[in-house]
Length: 90
Image 1 (spheres, rainbow, N blue to C red):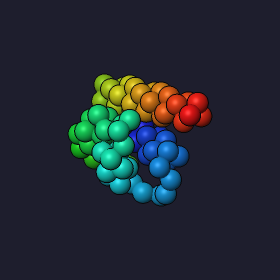
Image 2: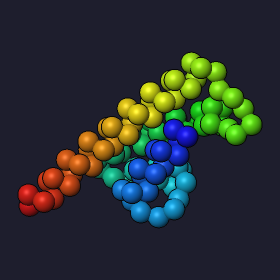
Image 3: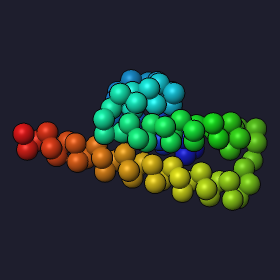
Image 4: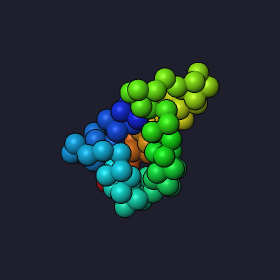
């Protein structure tokens, strides 16, 4: 679910119906989110271990994934909000 929430936020920013890898590519081209793209890319490798429909995550894995995703969403929202604010002042 955490990854779905992250993808949903990125879809709102960039549009489309792509998957996480698609949005990582877009972030790599985005000066505001370039730094987070590398982190999300490595975080994506965890997806198969923790966010799989036939596997139940250990409590610590689930809490860590939730916490990391929450932090990423907050960082992305803050950076994109500041970008929108800069544009409206111009």
